[in-house]
Image (cartoon, rainbow, N blue to C red; front, side):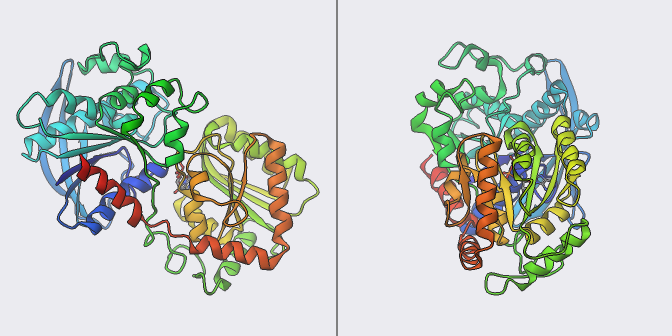
Length: 467
Ligand code: ADP
């Protein structure tokens, strides 16, 4: 079976959020289960791409001509975990420095080019996939393109899977770019009218199967609260909609062998975790004291993630002894609010506005609690990493957080989206932190969880086989 994965990001080459974790590890996990699978992963040749330590082989150059768009396509190849990774470069990527720009037209240009060039590339390479797995709106147009190519002999048996990692981003505002690339809008259907020319709904309509990254999110997107206007459409596709929880790469995320943390530790011996906490407390000018619970949040600064709720909750906790480190970047207003919080509570709150994978590892290893007060969370990777590092998640009960955290056993969950309720839940955690026996038990329960790809990759494989 030939499987083509398309993704805007894939760890370790480029990562902004959980999509990068998934695209970086799922193909290799599938290959592990069934070595005979022929898997290709195409990712864009972003300017910020990191390929140190990998051999990059020039593979193919060709021209892509679609309606008013003409560009060269430069394909390079890397091998990773038995998977052929292809870097798709071209003119639109030379004009953009960031993986995701605030200018939607520029992202439209980049990602429609990437999607169409990837499909054209595999055809030119005489490698027609049995299954195409496209991820999020950036690669949605590949599903549309395969749908149109199916009238040809070569593509007539190819099936498509469209995986939704985040329904909040649909590729709105790219109509003109779609027209420039000559991608026709869909005829009227059970999609709302605006969905006929928006990448994510178009792919959701045309894909053979739709995957969401947790079972709860698959149900949630069929409701008014989470469906972003597509809820009725998703209800109509319920039979083809599958929720498969993401896994994490247990080799990449392992506190016993993490080269970036000062002291290694494991479930059987957590001494190293205490050393890591001391080291972070002193690095950020906090009181070095094991008795003070250390919270962290490692996140994209986005409304979705509830950073505003967190900022507004701290005033209810002024009499409590705790420390908080915020690491994140994104929305400027949220960044500013977080910086102001540090100014207001020096010695208690530290804010770092940056994307820093090494620091994120040190924080997962040092903190007592990871906060995820998300408004919605399709899966969430941070809570799985934190549990692996013996750091207890405190999260809103939504999407994948609901599927992976058990209140009182492996974390602290709350429902109502309010700073007061978040503060109450943090108080509950701060209080329990003094009860060392219970705390240690929860920590042990977290570290005993197995979020490896084994089970989820098998579910993907069963899905592909069924198709
Ligand atoms: P999302 O995909 O919605 O951003 P997830 O929880 O699924 O959220 O995945 C986020 C991933 O990105 C985690 O691996 C997290 O550690 C990482 N991450 C987020 N922000 C930062 C940051 N500022 N620095 C380093 N890593 C980050």
